[in-house]
Length: 254
Image 1 (cartoon, rainbow, N blue to C red):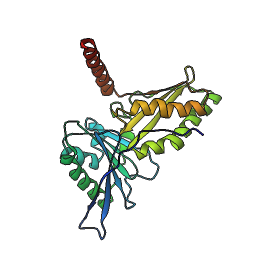
Image 2: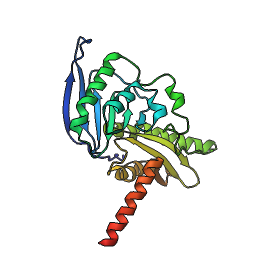
Image 3: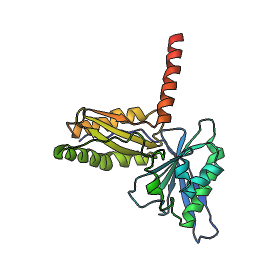
């Protein structure tokens, strides 16, 4: 059986215990490093959940005003933690992506305080209207959403791919503070379109994970899969192009 090889997670950074005066017990938040040095995973250790177990992760960027207004947790983090660029809310953890110029020592204590206070309050991470808002154009979720019309056989293949991602691939990525969103399979080319999220965003190891982990596994189990491509948001595409221009200039001078 093929074993999925993903990025090796770095050791535990630290464990923080924050006491809330309205609680009878302590809440434990573990802070874990990820393969992305600009992303940390904050893990709830006492059973408190941010979402129902198994829920799809919620990604909110500091530019997603349509989404931020429907999440008090996001509002508080972006307001009190300058330098946080994106948060990803899992079921029992929060992944924070920061500006490379900001040091974690200035962010992490405040993030832990905010997260602990939220867990102690029992409030929902998003409003009831959030699920509808997230699909609106510009809301950060409907970008580059692939649309394919499948016949019965193609639909079965697509469902098999999605099941493999959910059961074999996603759990390993969640462990590293990331997540993966299946965007579709093109039966004409055999291309699977995915969106990596959380700590996987802008991670230098994400391409290795994509090609040598995810693509290898899917091609092993599904003959119809020929390639796996990561979907990028518009700002990520711009950043990639600018980085390529810089790299080309440096290579030309070498």
